[in-house]
Image (cartoon, rainbow, N blue to C red):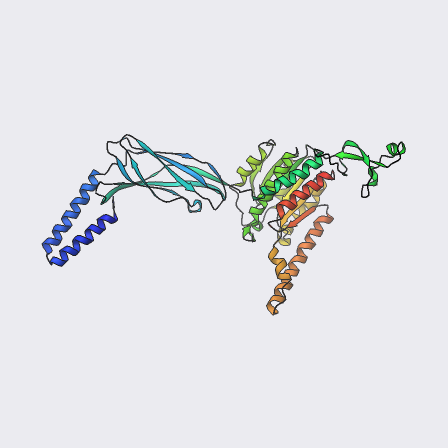
Length: 429
């Protein structure tokens, strides 16, 4: 049961009238009339228990976009239901508010709730609260009921805007725009005239001897190669850079890389790991890999502990026995890498072509240039030290044969895609 604001207003007016008359009997009479009206209104309100509630609507929503959850209310009773329905959801979905409804006897209505998610993951519906008002609008029957439904909020894939540009480069590598590459692939394509900058090892001396010009061999870029994207979901992925967690930037970078690689004809696998394997997409077809990765990424959250480098290495070795490109998305944090992945790098570099991608903090660069006062100088010194440690770690990885992509959040997805295309054009996959 619920009492409406109208009942409170009527009670206030009646009480003021009774007080003005200075009669206790009048006050009791007014209260009695109001209580009787509330009881009558409640008795005439349509019942709630017999209502049928069912759900439909979106099951997946991209973060940053809106979705709709549909609630169908059936009224098998003999009285028309006039009231308010509130469909509750988790706060991060920012669901629209209560809706006034009129459900005819023996009929049904559809209530649409707009969802505007602000966080990834699986979001379960709360309880549906129905308030059935009486004809006088003084009182209402009210009840809440669980109507299960789950919406999965997917990563937004903001770096999709770079896809046309990168695919144009890929088409050039594939020769679709008649643009031949200078790389050292394994599949011979054709001969062309030597230009400054070509690798002299590509010169075809026999063909050049038969003509009055120097000719070089051109090669088609490698296809049908395997790429394994490894996402470190340990504590460093929880750090916020430029207002967003590193993990979100890693997810965006992985999606762009997977989209380009799948279009290039390469096989893409995905593993998310910290102290245990959190997600795994292995063996998906090129047409399904992006959807499966997006679905697996939706529920990932940073684990606030150091990642297990041994587990990362063993998981990789079990997943791929042949040489392939392994892209590891992790932070260039000396402490975390020393305790985690760094000891396993020599073993992995001997087996795979390794590429490490990390999110650089542009704030560190800003601090390193500040010289306004003593505090700024100390901050600049600390920033320079952090940059030197990061550069030293990148140099160690490079000496071990590992490629390093270190870029701010807004540039990392495109930089990682360029690194992949560069390896592909050079035939190094």
